[in-house]
Length: 67
Image (tube, rainbow, N blue to C red; front, side):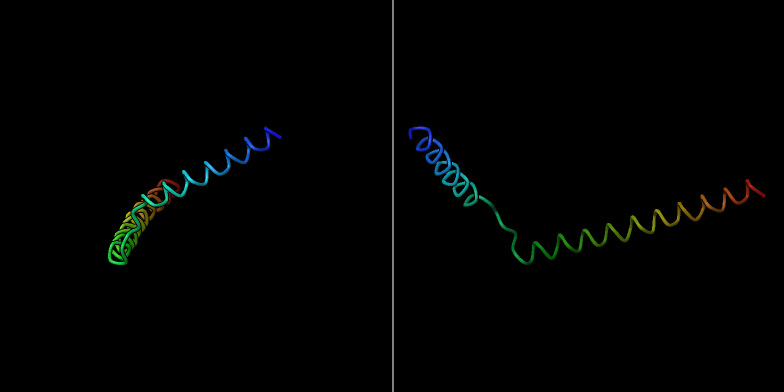
């Protein structure tokens, strides 16, 4: 019976500590979320163009070597 009480107390303590930590979380505002989204989309576009250019020239180089 003592083991059961110990497990229950550990569970209760865990949820109390988890709730305390969740109250410390900073949730971004809609403006911050939009700014972060724009940055991610912008970097994705830049990286895709960069990789596309590299791939284009790599394919052309290999084709020239194989001719």
